[in-house]
Length: 151
Image (cartoon, rainbow, N blue to C red; front, side):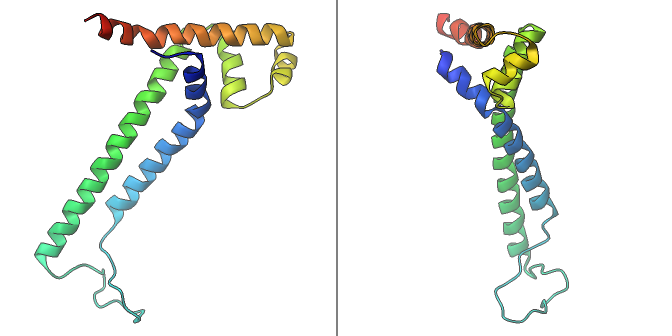
């Protein structure tokens, strides 16, 4: 069951999770583009033009290691994408105004005073709408958990 603080933490982490997903995608590309590993040597000239191993066994081991690394990264990416999807799904039920307050406060880290000025609302109204929006999101996030507990 999600509570107010947990949902706030999810919202604060949203931009970070998006950046982590992009970094994971870059890591996967880097591993996929990797040709081989250079051996340790003082000689700046490679022993072979591509730094590839000469042994089929070594090449196969490298391929398996590469596949495992990519597979692990894909699992990490999928987990982060699920978090993003949950947040975006919960955000989708909010009114445009409440969604804007959440985005400005949690994603852009704008102070309440600046949000109230931008939206032409009092600070009290912004606090009230922010709390209402987070509580609405809690209800959506907890629906699946409640159904699982009832089974």
